[in-house]
Length: 373
Length: 172
Image (cartoon, rainbow over all chains, first blue to last red):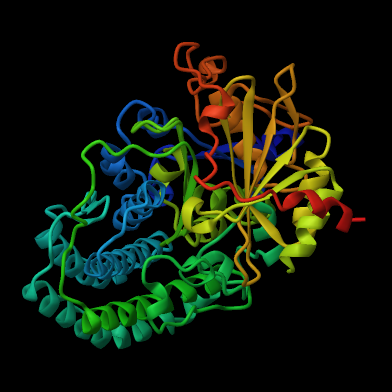
């Protein structure tokens, strides 16, 4: 063995590329790490591998026909992205949404959120080396996909919402299946709690790893479960009430520590809150139209700028549209939560063990296509 | 956070403040900035507990306009859109040492609109590949470029008498 190599200080630091094809980045993300042994001295995410010019595309076709694109940014929160965009155009054009349509939107959006959290739960634990939990969480998630497939026609990249409502009404079968799903998922909590949450190895790997503070969140624009993991009860469904969320009784789960374990728990507890919203919405579901009657085919948006912010599974999603009075947006900007959440990583992960980088980045629940857009 | 007080603080920096109807526009205040008071405004927003939601640019005549969006986590809704035109040489001062999250947003805006944020530590391409550094894909062709007046919200039919004129005095 050549011991000179070990003696030479130049070899103590080296560059490591995590990605663009790495299982724990869940998409085409590259992270450039400067390492000293097993410790990370510096790291920098490299973005743009999956850039699909959504904002440019938006400037070249009628605003209404951008709806399918929204689903392809955050493929796990597609219905919530639909919801935010529909709300943006309704706000701009001054269109009233029928009450039943708003209920349907909330029900499917919350199902979508549960589905996103379940996927994250399984995939995150898989990143950490626990293989079994994904079997359970995907089993549960599959039930949601089946329910949503029945009414929307797709399983992942939904284009279900329209300006003024949704494209298809829900029926009794949907209601009964959703109720059955809620009961089923609740009966599974003990499995998750005994198999995963109470596991001492998991707790040791997550607690006090990936520390962040509310101040850091404010400086980087971090929102969603991460921010709530520091004790800030900021959820746009409450802070800037939209749709019919004010009518429902639900809590905003928070933790105080601001580490991977905190955001893990926030997300896990949010599943139950989403189920509560769905349950109440099903109970109160009114009869009536599911799509506004008077939506013009060519939807002209009055000149001016419009913003629509909703709570996506990963944090704040904002659409900002500038209109010159025509039916084609002059400029559309999508503010996606993962973009700001990931930007905190260089500061958060400095000096960490590389295994903990996987833990803390997994706790961000990244969806790369929404970062690259 | 008191919305009257914060408006006065903005005006004290020399910014123009216009309250906006949230139901129509989805935000509460429109603030007009310049390259000179932009950084002081950002520092004030950080002190007041706002976070930077987004930073983006719109290409209009006479110059590219950069839009900063802020929101408040403190319970009461306050969503602010601040705008500043880039200077004649295409630059604006960076705010990424105040709001660290602006770092990537400014790099992205450099990619898409070619806005140069002076003082930025690493204004390298972020979303676009390095060979496309001069592509500036979201700049408009001269043919479709609109005047800034064309994208501003038209006042409602019955123009309400401007109540804003009296307020700068209250700031003193």
